[in-house]
Image 1 (tube, rainbow, N blue to C red):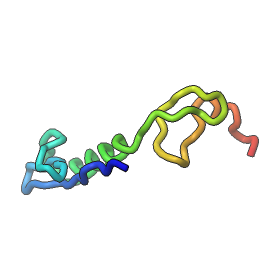
Image 2: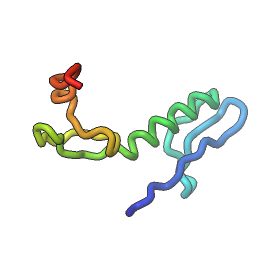
Image 3: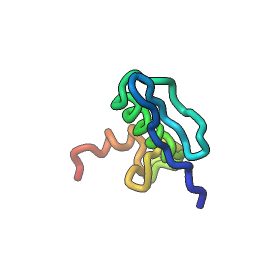
Image 4: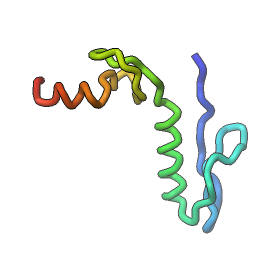
Length: 82
């Protein structure tokens, strides 16, 4: 199992950015810390998105994890059936 490097927000005043554990800056500079934290959360979500086959139609789609196994088309078709 490959573990992705952890992400941190570093900076001070009006200069905040997201870094990985190797020290590489992964985001642009933000003037407010909360904006850098939002970017960090988005980057962490993007790191776990993988291509998986839909359990219904077998079409590959971008899944956010084991809880997300139906593509959007099949999810819309089954909405309200459960």
